[in-house]
Structure formats: C-alpha cells, structure tokens
Image 1 (cartoon, rainbow, N blue to C red):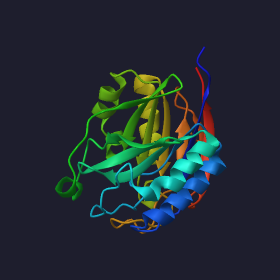
Image 2: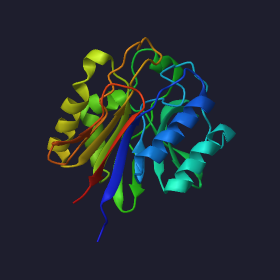
Image 3: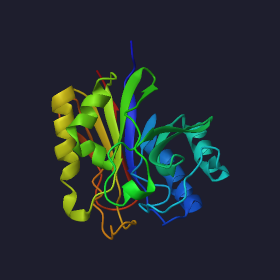
Image 4: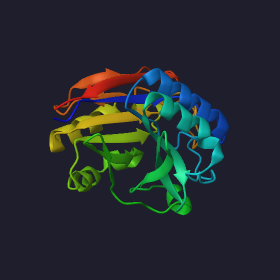
Length: 230
C-alpha cells in the first residue's frame, strides 16, 4: 500500500540575486514545514530576474539547503535559473541537488534569456508528481501532456501580482477536474523582480476533487501543508 504523502507549499522572503540568503530562508521553510515534499515559487533562489546567472546543481551555496533536507527527510522542489539555460526546478534532498524540470511555456523576455523544457514527472515514495512553472499552469495542454506521463499530483512554483491571487485556485481546480489529481502551487509573497513589486502570496493545495485543503496568507515567510491520500 502506498502511504499518504505530506506536501507543503512555501513562500519565503526573497532577496534579489542573493542565493546565499535565499538558501537560508528556504532551509527555515523546510524545517518549519515538516513535510516530505516542499514546493517553492518560480526562481525562488534568485527572485524573478531573467538576467540571473544559472544555479548549477553542485553549487556549494546549496549546501545548507541539502543539510536541511537531510535533517528533515524532505525533497525540496526549488525554483531557479538552471543550465540550458532554463527556468528550472531543482530537486534537492539530503544527497544533493539535480535539475528536475525546465519551464515549457516561456513568454515575454523569458524567450530571449531561456530555452523551453519538456513535461516531466518526479517519483516520491510511489507518488508521481507532475512539475510545472507559472505560465505552464495556465496552458491546459501542459497539464494534459504531463498527465499523459502518469501522475497523481501536479505541483508548481509561480509568481503572480497581488491582484491575481485568484488565479492559483482557478487553474488548480481546472487541473483537478480535468485529470483527477492533487494540485500544489507555491507563489511568491512580497516583492521580487520583473516588475512584481507586490505579489499575491496565497500559496495553496487542492485535493483531487478540486477542494481547497490548505492556503497561505499574503505575507512572506508563510508555509502550509496537507497530506495527499488516495
């Protein structure tokens, strides 16, 4: 029997381009979450700055993050520019980090700085989690292509302006309705780059029937969790 999976969404305070400081904030969120999986916003290690240098998996600045994951038995899905270059998700655990995903549906200035990735799934304790970054969640074809790989959940890191707080739920409910899977969305709270002076917060987790199970508030530093079950 597959065990339930504890998943958290985190919205740590972000310092532009300061990977070291942001790693510390991520480690604090991981320890506070007490979850098997912790999902972070888009480009959470650098802020949403398309000109930020890629973060390589063996970057020594990630060591405190690896340590936090080792202590808590957590897999952290961390947003960062990664080699490619892509807008990526780093999968970090107690053994180290690896690039797990690159954003598929780029837009605006992203297309100048990055190349698109492909749909991807990560397996955690028998749960298959489809990965997404921001605009991916607004393109039904992305969820469909990811679901075709076989998924139990769809997890995303995003950045939205403060007036777009309802977008997370609208998209999550659509994915749940179309594919019958759990959805977890980690959103920025507080300022970040790319013109996002005020962001939405309101990271959330929705069950496979589309019901809201957990939701953070609008402030940086909040973490909420839920348990995926069959």
